[in-house]
Amino acid sequence: MKIIFRLDDIQGFYLNKTQIEIIDAFLKHSSGPCPINLGLIGYNFIDDSWLSNEVIKRTKEYSEFIEIACHTWSHKPLIMLSKEEQIDDIKEFKNKIQPLFKQEIITLIAPENYFNEDTYEAMFKNDLSILSSVFTVELPFQKFDLGNYPISIPANILGSHYPNPEFRSPEILLDEILQLKSENAEQEIITVVLHPSDFFNGNQIEISRIKDLSNLIQSCKDNNLELTKFSDFKGIT
Image 1 (tube, one colour):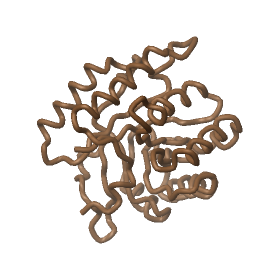
Image 2 (cartoon, helix red, strand yellow; image 1 turned 180 degrees about the vertical axis):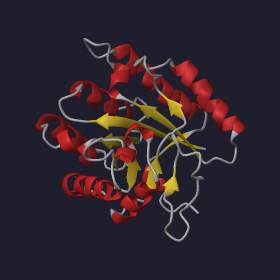
Image 3 (cartoon, rainbow, N blue to C red; image 1 turned 120 degrees about the horizontal axis):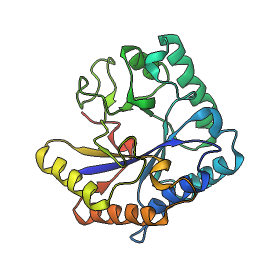
């Protein structure tokens, strides 16, 4: 079974150093570089030259291990937008963010995990083929049929539980991951969702939580869970 780590809310002028520390926990892991998927918020990422340069530099140096996903341009819940507004929002993201990176962006991470039928058309209009969201019960894990639906990769595990933005212990998270693995043998993938705020205590980066994340990565590998990227599932049948 494979596991995706998804870091949401990569954005400018917000916990910048924390965001980079989390990314580096994967790219500079003691066992070697590990894949990480980044959900970028477009509108202010591009305005923060320090953060954007740091992320771009890492995508060049670790091109096989870091993947960019569309967390939309505005970060507005898609269900609040008309179909045309959804199309335009994702289009602006693709037009302004994709040229910064030497990779095709094919994954949509729905803000606040909400989407509707219009989202599917907005995705296809903008060449996005993978949808990652918590609330995907009605959308089976399968390749879209006749272009009607995207590949759905549900988010199964949350690094923190609202309203407590604190990274949970690696032991608890590993237990949940292994339980999912044992209960869903036919499921090909588990997704763990992280946020920058999981690793910040209001005043500074919590280095102990970064170390916990590194330990969780190692535990996943020790339990034969292959860390991977969204694009590895582009051709799923």
